[in-house]
Image (cartoon, rainbow, N blue to C red; front, side, top):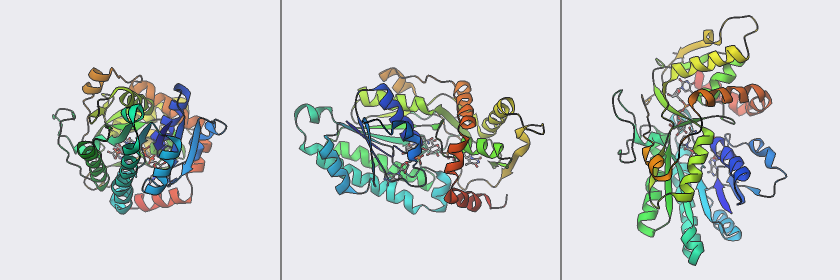
Length: 354
Ligand code: NAD
Ligand code: DAU
């Protein structure tokens, strides 16, 4: 079986659902269920014996060691992290606890387990660390896209904590020979995306008649990839990636934030026209910029394409349409994740004057 951490979050739950429907191996899912973890994402697996869930922390070394040994785990895929840049600016401590110290404890548990394995079990074992393009810092308008050779220049507490975890993973390969793989992916979007992040926040705010808060001038560029394509890239790297290597994953879809918001509004205007007429665009509000805001990310995905034959299945146009449709069809999910704690975050974060 494989051991997935953070499998109740946005990308992790999409990965678990895809894995169970596509593959033959069982999944053991360890998640702390922070505000971002939601077992409802996995409800369709409730009666499925191929998925087991344990609530716990990747930093609980004893727990992880016992789970790895009990289930004779074949591979670990590490999604567990604090993932929201704005939260890392307000409260960096939890990012250090989970992304740095938690990853270290997880690596220690995995090293202990792996060092006992022998023969084919040892040969076939893998530790795949899911990371981000943000570790490379910010690009100028004419800079080439990030390759795996770019130096690390993280700019936020979030990206610095992810960079630290990447370095630890690399060091465990170099020093102990742990069979690791790292993926550095661009911005994901799709079903089960927590509505604190740009695309789902815009959809849910638009539908609720609330302002659509665009930071600064809205000309910051991100490189968007449909979450299902990130999951297929991880599966492919796990299957055939070269040990100790990193693979950049991206959709060749660079777009300024304001264009993303306009696209979301246009799709909502088409699929769910406003009752009183007019466009959702009228709700766009420019707000105070994110401190230290990275201006541009872009991923050069040629290594994973060339070496592993991976390519995204969705274009931005098909992926964003599916995503808006999913949110329109899953208003109950949205309502349930907008708990008291969610409301507190929105009030605290967006109360700052422009
Ligand atoms: P998310 O915030 O939606 O989910 C994170 C999950 O990890 C949650 O279920 C949470 O409960 C769990 N978790 C947090 N701390 C934990 C701990 N100490 N122990 C166990 N579980 C814990 O995040 P996401 O967007 O799904 O991102 C998943 C991974 O992918 C992260 O490592 C992130 O850095 C990386 N990533 C995300 C994106 C993106 O666009 N969302 C892009 C590239 C890489
Ligand atoms: O690049 C990969 C990263 O993408 C992941 O590692 C992170 O986990 C993930 O959260 C994401 O980080 P971003 O900061 O790029 O995503 P976010 O959705 O928070 O913001 C996307 C862009 O939109 C960014 O330039 C900030 C802007 N933005 C965001 C919010 C929440 C706004 O203009 N208004 C908003 O209200």
